[in-house]
Length: 294
Figure 1 (cartoon, rainbow, N blue to C red):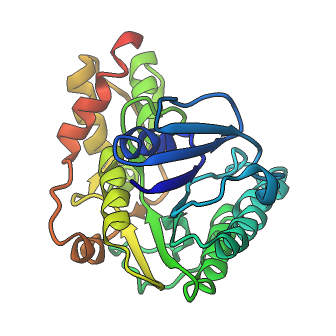
Figure 2 (cartoon, rainbow, N blue to C red):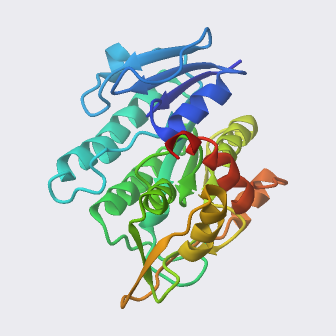
């Protein structure tokens, strides 16, 4: 049984990670609020990562750090720029140095596909990085800082694409569900909207578990974490319409359709074999958590 520290433990992905990993490991979860699960294998640390004192508030003897925390102000630039810097850069630096000094063996960092230069191609890990947002820039900065520590412990950098699943709020898929339900118009550039390669949250957790199981000494793995399929927003809406039993209201706009799609080939090489949840099945499972709203 490993001792694992998870930041952002009360967040969407963090909650799933804590629940699953606590079945096999002793998990310490850092969260700004009192949310999150607690059981005999989970110890919650209520602290603001932006101001945490790693020397006094974090436990020793940690084997692996899973750094999932992100600023709640990530969409709010420039007003949220200070909080984004404090969480994504400053807190990451503090965690890295604490991890080095306390003998942590593995550091897993949740980055984002927003680090890439925009493209209509499937994004791979060798695609140019040129973020067009302050959030993406802070995440890419954190990646560069983390890479400098690969000589001290094993580093995994995960560039996440459109994670979705039960209980999520305020993101593309739950927002689309809410618009269908409320008969609010869904904007579709060129009649199709954005193209994405969404990944079901439980697949993200399985990836993290595999990376923990296969870490072997100092070094680095950097990979996209996305699903096998590419779907347009129209494709997503059609599935949700059938699940909800209501038709969506569309508003075709003059803007160009955008793409936010990635290749998971490198990830699959690391995993050796993994069957990702397909979009239809993932949306059906996600829908179960929305039913109470109908």
